[in-house]
Image 1: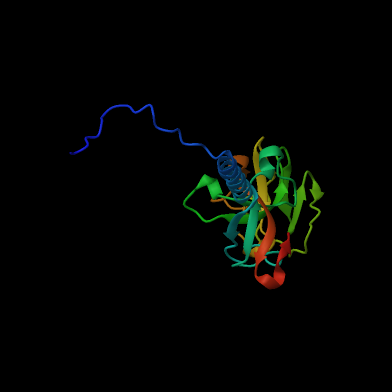
Image 2: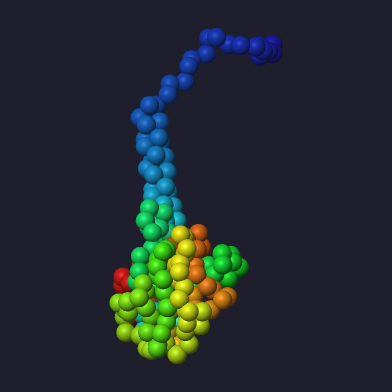
Length: 194
C-alpha cells in the first residue's frame, strides 16, 4: 500500500523556534559593521583625500611627488585664511590635476606686487615661510581687488609657480577650492602636519 502525501496546509506541524540570542548577535554585528563603514567613509571623504604635489612651485614647503592629505570638510564650515595651503582645480577644470598653493589674499583684499614684494591692503604681506623676491609680478603689477568669493594664491617658490599672477589661473573662486592641505604622508622622512 502506497501512502500518498496530502497536499495543502498542515496545521499539525510544529512551529520552528526562533533563537533570539543569534538574531540579537547578528543585528549587533550588522550595526557595528555599518557604523564602522560610515566612520571610514566620513574620514576618507572629508579629511582623507590623498593627492600628489605636481612640480616644484611649493618648494621648500612641499616638493614634487610629495603625497598629502586634504581636509575637504574645513572649508564647508569656515573660509580659507591667509597662509593656508589650499588644493584647488584651476577655473574648476575637473580634467586638470590638483594645484597646491598658499592663500595670500582673501575676499575684499587688494593685492599688488611691487619691487618683488607682495602687498596686501597696502602693507607688505607677512610671509609664513622664506620666499625669494618676485621677478615677474604678472597681473599683480597693477592692484587687484578680490571679489566676494575670490582668493589670490601664490606658490612658495615664487619665481617658478603658475598661480594667481597669470591669466590662465587668476583669482580662485571658493567653489574651485577642494580643501586644505593638512598632512604630508610621503616621503616618509618628512611625514607630518603642514
